[in-house]
Length: 424
Ligand SMILES: [Zn+2]
Image 1 (cartoon, rainbow, N blue to C red):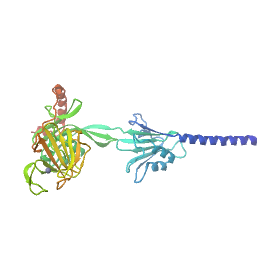
Image 2 (tube, rainbow, N blue to C red):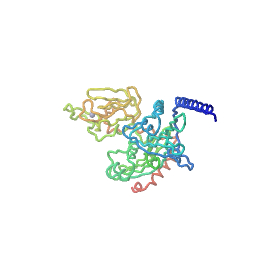
Image 3 (tube, helix red, strand yellow):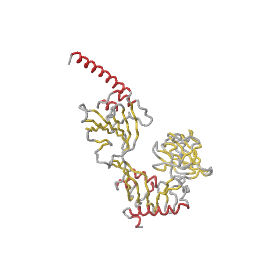
């Protein structure tokens, strides 16, 4: 080969290198970040995967986000360039904030150990929560793909029972049931069972769903059906759907819900009853108290006792922050001494159970409590003696369907051991 030809080849190689570098830079400059949201499960076929990624050719390093660590910091430590990190941070975050990571959350780094001599991160996986995780895919030449995945959630229907010795909470603990079951039960039976007056020997049977991800329980769903044996009475909660809404009914098809809640909050005790003459704690002279006071910690949510429209949301010297709800032409309710209001304003419609405010001690008050009044045709009546009418029962046109569904639920509930309900 002549020296001229060798020079020519050398020049050609130089030119090609320059072109390649320029071309690469152009490609890098147009690098895109794609965001895709998908719900997938691990494939059924026999490829071993983790987070849906075949693990065969990867070294996987697991970690948890430590204090002060950023997504960019972790990525750059594993060979991702500052330029790529910047691209990710510029992604529109209207669907998902892909740069935010939280301390203590697990992550995994998939490093390609086969195709490259220098180990290179192909995938970064961040676990957003127990169900969701985000995959940052760096395997494409010019595009970073960010995918949000949902892990497969298994639902197992469970049944449980317990006998009250002292409290519902203790019964739940004794039977080693999930603590969330106590809350779910207090919601389903809120209108029929007085949880502040449970007696030794009261008992329950319930059917509920428990959710699992990779064999770990992540929580429970609503109570599907249940029975509470309370003060010698069988109180059923049988689910039934009509007019697009699912409610709980007794065996006769009566709604277990009342039009008014027994109490518009979870309280610790009744601190002052309805009375026409009592010593006022602030004014130190006899004064009627045509209301009931529920002592509860500051910040306890206060619910609308029934559906209605907010007619007053104000501050008064005596009542502090207070709300009045008009439920219909007969009934209104008043709630006083809030520490702060909920999100509803005058004129807003509220549904029973919506949070209208939080317990506080504003106005004439000697400690955090809710002062609660029920007005019937303009007269303040005793909320603790008020017997509210039940919500809508099963429609007569739906009775046949209700009775057949009811039979199945009752059979399932009765089958739960022990059979303490049949002993009476
Ligand atoms: Zn009061």
